[in-house]
Length: 224
Image 1 (cartoon, rainbow, N blue to C red):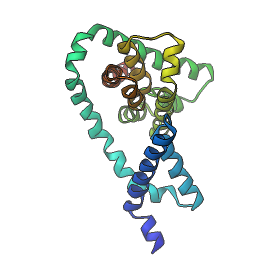
Image 2 (cartoon, one colour; image 1 turned 90 degrees about the horizontal axis):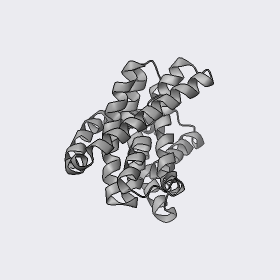
Image 3 (cartoon, rainbow, N blue to C red; image 1 turned 120 degrees about the vertical axis):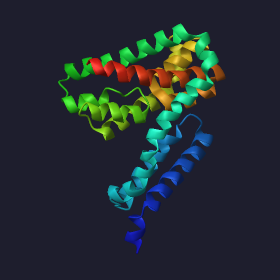
């Protein structure tokens, strides 16, 4: 009966929800630790400690993955809601997002060629700086592995969420528009949660950058 419970989709959904709630509580106490990092660590720990096959967790966890497509479509609504800000800073937004997308894609290509990385792995790492749903689609369309792409996206997002304020001080970035664009272009949704904590303008610009960079990256990889 216990095995039947573990193989039920409810197990994966419940574990994911519980781990996320725990991550939020940890963030409240520690401060800057992203809840996604805590949640992922807890899920891995539970599966490893009780030797639960990943397939049991995936039976429910994949239901969450199904929501990535609709969430991607909702990004268009975010652009609409921020249309006034986007109109006011249209040229800087477009130029900043284009520069960020080009830098992200080109840096991965150069590093993969320098270290003679397999084509499938390179394709998986290529969209690391866009949101997960778009990144998986780009990676799989080029022969990459969706799981590796999702992991690369998470690492990029966590790096931005944790170190964004430090980088802003280090490079003397004081303009909230520039700071928000940089965070959203490099570390997508995870970075945006941090940008919203920094300030409303940073959060708005970072949200716009997620959408614009996702579109630009999808176009750029067509020419590679």
